[in-house]
Image 1: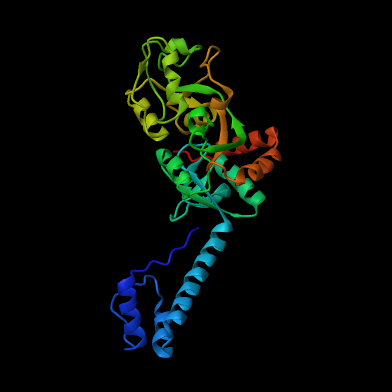
Image 2: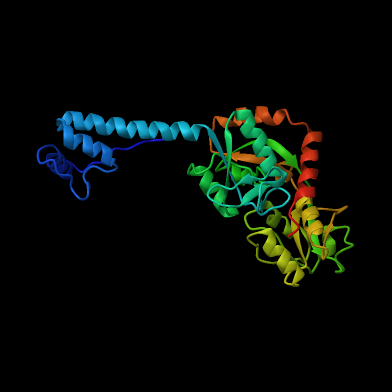
Length: 315
């Protein structure tokens, strides 16, 4: 946190003269910004010298900044889209461990939220969940709006150019979600989707693997999974690439959708199918968070995911 005392020299002198000599506060203190009225009152009543005025102003600004820094040090701000069940979703109350979304009356729940709660507890901080569109997560992290991303994000080499990642906190396989009763429901290989219209979420590695299917019609990437489910039901697409937990979530929430797992599936790297928390480059939180994650066993992680799938919203 950097605090600034912004002044305009000529206007500042004029305002100080007005305050000290004439005991008159200008209508708009454009020369010295952010001076509380109570401080103006002290200046007017006591007729402080210029040095005294400056000291009062600086101490006021520094005290305010110090309080803000201390408050921010006590929280762990995590960004997620709250629309990728069972990793993260939006709900109306705090049931099943939901956490209130910052600046909203809604709450966030899901696997990412549960992991973020563990991390915040391990850091000794209060968890603050910030709902951000997928494409806005990296810019929000890089600009300091949030401290971390916990959004079912894979630590791909491309993303590692911009941000750092913790150790993985989940690993999943790629599958396809199709409409129940369609010709693709019984597919065993990704090549069974030859001629099919397939898509995936924008800015994810899911979209980059579609071209492994011979003769596929790669439709335009979509912004979120809700849009893809609607497109699938309406026949705009024949299937979309997803991770197993989301596909289970989709089929559980909608009887018209079904998950297809492959014997001959997509070729992926381990980092592509891993899920990790994103951090700002050089963040000192990385080592501490990895310590917290190391204390969560693989069995416990799967239990948390199973619980998230069970508790996800029906729509």
